[in-house]
Length: 375
Ligand SMILES: Cc1cc2nc3c(=O)[nH]c(=O)nc-3n(C[C@H](O)[C@H](O)[C@H](O)COP(=O)(O)OP(=O)(O)OC[C@H]3O[C@@H](n4cnc5c(N)ncnc54)[C@H](O)[C@@H]3O)c2cc1C
Image (cartoon, rainbow, N blue to C red):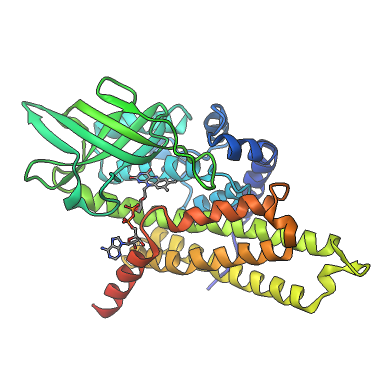
């Protein structure tokens, strides 16, 4: 067993860190406040091969592993903004197209993401459901060799941006089916981004599908088999989200260390106090456990181990509350300053709260893990 990252992974980590420090950190407060990402960020990410990095060279990608992608997400999320979602979506959605899509779909939908010209989206959630394929109210109706999609999708990340979406719909008496659709065309419109508590830049919008007409060839995978694609994507999304939590918690630990060394209590650094040292030690130990569970889940996915989807759920069950604790401890070390908008910890605190709300609740992940254990 070897726990060390390769030379290439260390280099990747360093270069993405540099990118985040130069391109994201200086505008992180602004992204957080406005709730949107700068328009040119996706192009900048494409230039350093972050978009579609896990695609093989056959499709124009750099053949990076899922673990590499997690290392990149960790560095981008260090800012406490939602910019990491851009790395996550531009990798996880093209991966589904490679795995489940036709030659036509691979030809059409991969290159624009690699070049930073298309924002891919996933649209499953609706007002009445975030996880139940039988409860979908978005429908598709066949019209010769086309399908007509109607319904409203909720919280679609980057749903208003140009690019394409994988839309999940249920036919009348048909099972959940995934369609790929260009966004912002006739029959597709989007609202303005939800004002989120944190993680500014995730840009989640409602999407209105009004008789959106799609040719048959736009079905991703097989008709009626959409839920299998969603489960695959969502398991990957959980690992990516754990990577983001680790990045946010690392930033919280670094903020706490710096604060504790600079803050004076009776003329001496706060870092000399036993209770502060004890908190720092706890934060470090918890963060490392969360980090390595995340890496292990990514490693299992890279190894095509069939247990990887269960491990992704287990990682989420552990990593989300653990990293939230780390951020909370950092906030306490900051005293009253941690409760002000002047401190970065305040942004990190709000950013990490989103982790328990996106991509399947902790409770449902617990039931996924326990079902696998009992089987
Ligand atoms: C910032 C953001 C971005 C998002 N991006 C996207 C996106 O790009 N695409 C997309 O499709 N969705 C997206 N979502 C939606 C998100 O994935 C769902 O909101 C999430 O899966 C939870 O669904 P829900 O809100 O319906 O919660 P619910 O499913 O209603 O859950 C609420 C509570 O009820 C409990 N609960 C629900 N059902 C059960 C059950 N059967 N057994 C036990 N407990 C249960 C849950 O554990 C939880 O505690 C996004 C959400 C946010 C906040």
